[in-house]
Image (cartoon, rainbow, N blue to C red; front, side, top):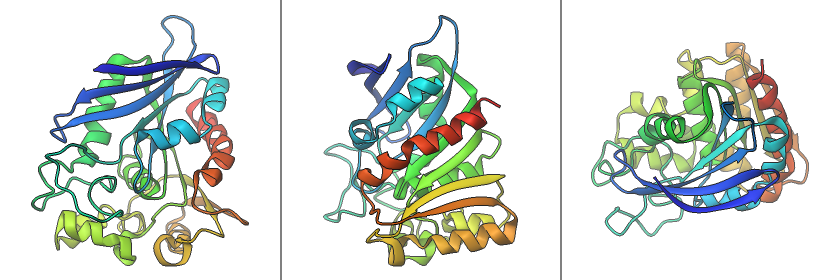
Amino acid sequence: MDTVSTSRAHGGTQGVYRHASAATGTDMTFSVYVPDHAPGVRLPVVWYLSGLTCTHANVTDKGEFRAHCARHGLIFVAPDTSPRGDDVPDEDAWDFAKGAGFYVDATQAPWAANYRMWSYVTDELPALIAAQFPADMDRQSIMGHSMGGHGALTIGLTHPERFRAVSAFAPIVAPTQVPWGKALDRYLGDDRAAQRRHDAVALIEDGARVTELLVDQGDADAFLTEQLRPELLAAACDAAGIDLTLRMQPGYDHSYHFVSTFMGDHLDWHAARLSA
């Protein structure tokens, strides 16, 4: 692991790091914020997954999470959204390929060689964080925005034993039912069972459970009606008995102005469950 940069912030250290990923076959960059703490103390970890077109830098620069993490003593980890590099296949589309890994392990050519973000986020990067940072891996939670909200929900629902809290900002909740789901067609082919494993609503319909979820959604979000459709998640959670707190925020859009406004609420919510 190489250190790209470190900076002091809110009584802690904001770092950016790079390593060679076996999962993606590329170098991967990620950011980690570690509050100051007593020697030997291990801190709970909040994972943040970013959305379409983003890298680790979007939330690191605009998410306004550090003061809240410092107050609660939370490590905040933000990986990239997809593999990068000249040899990584790409397309001239902002919502597919680089910047749009959708947190799946692709099975279809030419994507399968590099687009293995599920393995990267659930296996490889956690092992690195456990080895290199003062992380208490028995106390983890996960959140995300948009495509990253999709990733947080599907990973949290698949690994409820690992994550004590799961939340999302404006998540894609049912990719198999919206246009952005074309990514699952391209990455996973026509394997409908595999696609359902990467669709939060389908996972719940198929028996996946967590105790509770927190979702914030702006009602002025341009993607709300066609791509995000939080009412589908609400219906699935109601039928499954999952305690969903879905907050429709008047006047807010899909941007980091929205995310940063409610970041503190989410980290308060995560901290309460990570300290239990």
